[in-house]
Image 1 (cartoon, rainbow, N blue to C red):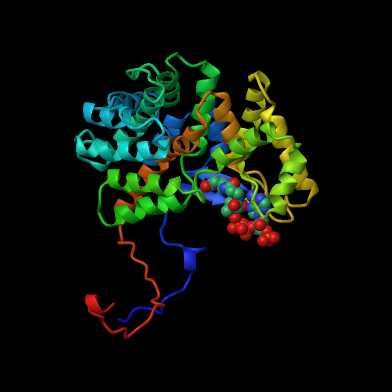
Image 2: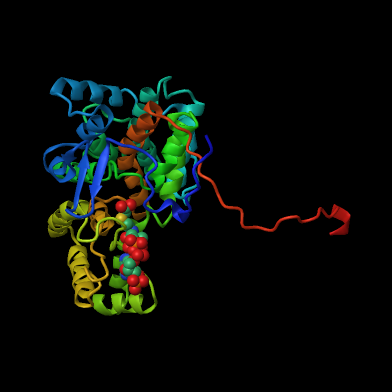
Length: 378
Ligand code: CMC
């Protein structure tokens, strides 16, 4: 049977290349579902680890199942000497996403990831936040702390980064932020992980590639850009409206606004907006939340919101939330990676379960019939 005519769709926009039971994004309602459960409801009632279990297993855990899952993570949170050295000896100005990517990759070199895809996946979920917190301390010249088995992923991360047990509400907030980033359809990093898995490569390689894809400013990065914009506004002599007006005048996009799928609103942003308002009331310093409201009001006035199909996205509020929790700005994208690891690992498993090598084609548009010129004649 001959191959069907090739379909040309640069960027693969709107092309379906996989079936998934993991997350569903409905841009019309708008709604995000994890395994059919509303992510907003999970954010209110559940936890990141429960959600990771749901994504991996297709159903929410019983208490015993969750305890067992937690125990499996706890026993893997520590880093081997080899991985710790990579992280602790990274230059202090190293880009945290580079450190995280290297740490995840190095876990395999030191054989601490187990044999099966599930063991590999547990290892990433457990060790990625440890590696990041370890780097955060090392670059401040502080000693590495051992992970604690009485704290969950979010609380452990804050404890290992800051050296003190986090405020309970702060840990809950970070847990919710991780949950809201857990999975989001076939975005670029998830697609990358599935392409790698489709070659029957291993989970660690797939996740290393996914972190690399998330690092790009067109994918991760907007949460950091939002915070940098706010800090810049605060330091400038402009008010919020004129700052944003200048951005638009210069043809720049306002970070934290717009989404390819969500045109009315991003359901993740709705949850984080409330949290951003809550933390702003207890955080000293400039009123970041108030500034975001002013940015949004200006864009609304300018009829960018709705008429242009842009509205606040998840990154608008996650940045100020992380900032209020004392997480360094250059850790914002790695935090996205830590949360998304639950989805990447589930997606890789789904790819293995029903695999077909992902192998699109490129149309050759270069020259033909070019004669070879020997090196000394060029
Ligand atoms: N600020 C100002 N104008 C915007 C923005 C923005 N943030 N986003 C879109 N527009 C305008 C855009 O210039 C275009 O105007 P015109 O019709 O005059 O050319 C119109 O809105 C439609 O834009 P588009 O490029 O067709 O929209 P898109 O769906 O391709 O882009 C986006 C989506 C997220 C890439 C874009 O909105 C953007 O660059 N936003 C800023 C960066 C950002 O916040 N990214 C985080 C995305 S959410 C994270 C995730 O889910 O992974």
